[in-house]
Length: 334
Image (spheres, rainbow, N blue to C red):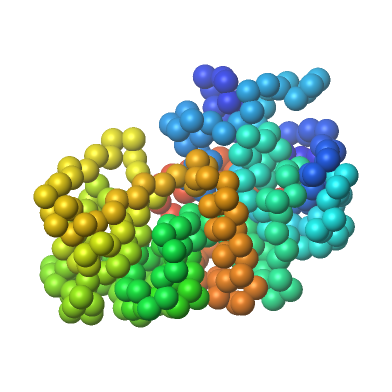
């Protein structure tokens, strides 16, 4: 098969596209013929050593030390390992965590991974939608729902045009939250958040952001899903209701936030930091289930621009994510 690979332990982290033996699924595993793979920030961060790699430490027998990147994809079931009876060969699926402690990531013609990481893709859901779920949607689902039901709660989502933020808007509306407010940086991004179901958007580059949010929710926001808490904490606290939860899911290595302890105490606020790769297994499965339910109900849609790259340009695809491409970056698998 054709696959993109890099060597996690090497000082040179360049990607190469080459022929590899097609892997066979073991017990409890599924082999998926990949059609489209989704690219996430953790792909280039893990490859370059900016964050801890999720690659296995030992090389596959006889074919050296390598990692196939990309956690997310859409494709079809190609083969089933012993004991797998929840899927059928030829079934359309979306996958997540393909490269998490598993060398057979999604940037290849075939990925082999545990069956629980392979979900049915509804007939009315496109491969583009399926490949864009995974890390963004599951992150959003965990941030939104890990504290319990959010029905009728006011939700603020910073960065409503980002992959996680846009999914969080759609999942919040599907869960009955409201009003759902998203911050954005332009009119174009406001339209992306509104298309996902946001009740209102506020441009954070304009003055009076907190006042405009408070006008929409005088009693304060109950849950805040924040893409940059180091920059947004002052705003978060200005609009938070008492006992509000602020969930932070993204950061740069240099990110640091000064905590106004007395203000947090006065609000009885909860600060929740998360990384999808380290959440408890039961919580991860709950996020998967809620995402799949929203997908089946048609609540998750293609709202964001797409940037498509052929497999031989996967390095360019990762660079596009690193450089802040608005929308979803996808890799086409031949």
